[in-house]
Amino acid sequence: MIPIIKNNYKVLGLENGPTAALIWLIHGAGGDMFHFETVVPTLTQAGYRVLLNDVRFHGKSQPKPLGEYPFLFDDVKQDMNLILQEVKQQHYANNKIQLFVGGISMGSMISLLYAADKAHQQIWDQDQIDLKGIILLAAGIPYLEVDRNGWDQFRTRQVTKEAFELARSSITVSSITEYGKNHAKRAIDQVSNHALYECLVAIAELLPSPSSAQPIKPYIPLTTVPILLIIPDQDPYTRIEMEELHKINLEHGIQSHLNIIENSGHLVTLDQGLQVGIQTRDFCQSCL
Image (cartoon, rainbow, N blue to C red; front, side, top):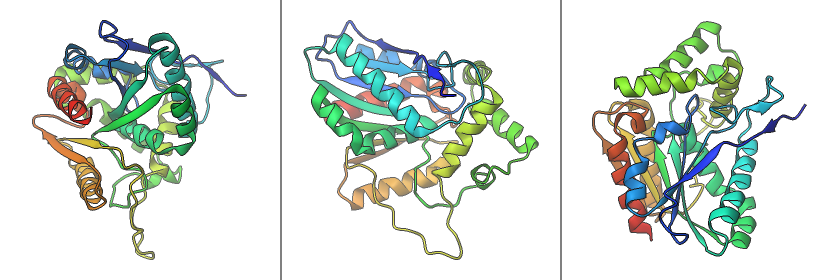
């Protein structure tokens, strides 16, 4: 049975007029839209509108009927198309959307995949949507071959119950502040074990590790749109691949900005939301 998903989203900063650029921020696996609660004020005060949503099977974007379903990034991208078309009709009916799309962790992967999908281009052209930039926070980079720990067992669906429980609990403690840990726990408590497992499998399938039997494949950037990469200083795992993407971007002549935020864990938007907001604001201003 194909579930019906009621996409839960909201647009903030509507006091900024219909010509205001739109920044779409997407949460990670086990999160929800409130992971950007302390990021948004800086952006709306700077004149932007901000679009937040709960990715399918998270927050209030739950399936009907309730049940166990696969998590596919293609489905997520289709959800995004529907949301963006509704936002265009309701809030930008007579105006072009200058769009920035970004996210944290899995949300960064979704942002890159969405920006790179040429199938959307006809829709964007028809609806007058202009992608201006991408914001990646604590991101795994799809298709980039680097050494990664723990993902092989999800890719092969051979993860043990104990390893899954460890992965689930590690999401909660990947914030280093009490505020962040509380928000992380609140959000992940709304996500079933099955949904989170399917998310982690889908992520793992896009994060290859080098094979000793095969040469590393050269990485081709998924998009040439300007990119902001924000690295939490206490997240050594995503740092390696984000620095590698930054290097590759520059080699290909892509406008790429790499910033490190101090005193933050993987869930950097919960630990240092103000700093994320400031860096995102400044990047977007540089692209307009």
